Amino acid sequence: MKAYKYIEDSKKVLETLSFEFSKMDNSKTRLEDLNTIIKMLNCFESMLNEKYYTDFMELLILSRLYQTLLKADFSEVNVTEFIQYFEQDLRFGKDYYKEQIAELLVDKQRYNSLTHGKLHQDKKETWIKSVNNLVKQVKMRILWTKKYK
Image 1 (cartoon, helix red, strand yellow):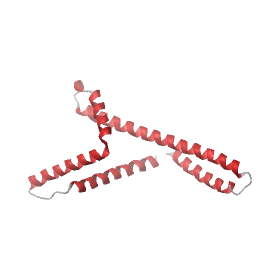
Image 2 (spheres, one colour):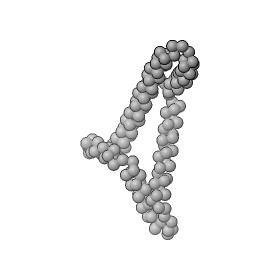
Image 3 (cartoon, rainbow, N blue to C red):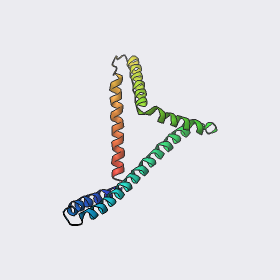
Image 4 (cartoon, rainbow, N blue to C red):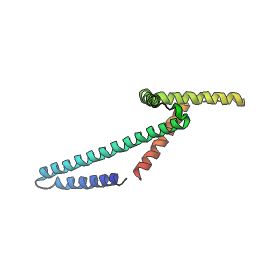
């Protein structure tokens, strides 16, 4: 996104100017002016971040709603239930879901081991590390996409 590049470029210019102004007469007034501009840039940057994260949350909500509608018979669509599940997701938090995913993977691995006659089974902690790595990879892709949009 170009706005982020402009912010970074402006911060570099302001940093150089503040260094130069600190050596000049009347530097106090000029430094106060620079600090005002820096505060404005930081405020603008935080507004962009809030918009990005709000847009990202909206994308997740719409994606989950779309998946719910795909699975549902249209005569049985219950928006209240969808909202309750979404609120439940937020209430339980990420650690709860990491544990649940790890337990599910352990159970699936146990089932596959029994059906294929192999007795290999990873511990839940191993699966939690794998889930953490996957989440980290997804976050990195999101940041990469955001940076170069």
